[in-house]
Image (cartoon, rainbow, N blue to C red; front, side, top):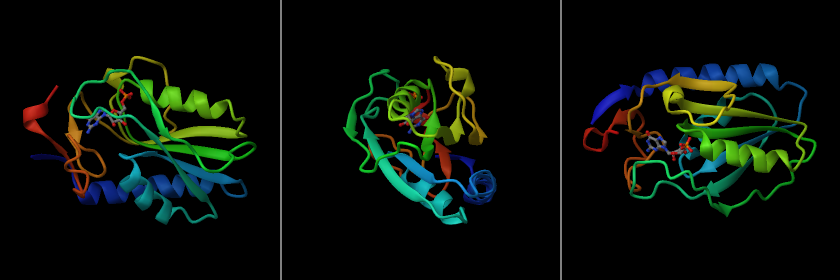
Length: 172
Ligand code: 5GP
């Protein structure tokens, strides 16, 4: 495993993003929506540094499974518990690759008429994008590599790693 982004780099960037969110959402009605499973580590760290009242909820979608290539097929396994109508939503994702997953989820959530909806992703692979998607809060832009750690898995392994690494045998 090769380290791509260290624990220290992640922690310092997460604090910066949280500070930016806290400034932007003062006096608003923030709901942070994490996409399971990959975003759980990022959302847990991020939310603890956002010094504002907020609520959290989760959506679970089908993932790559044991495959490392995007199928473009998104299946909702767990929907939100709370009503987001009229509220200020930030969708929190681990990584934006083709953008298909998030654009599907964002469209679905927009139909519920939140007063605003923005996207926060720890990692972004702009070269892999297949659909247009605005990522307002982005941790790091990375090249077309298959990465694991800090919530990201390969066949359910490596999610617990405190850093982001490149799994050499699964490189795209
Ligand atoms: P997209 O729909 O943007 O192509 O893919 C988004 C999802 O694909 C992410 O939430 C993540 O589950 C998975 N994914 C994309 N790139 C990577 C990667 O480099 N490593 C891992 N572990 N998952 C990835």
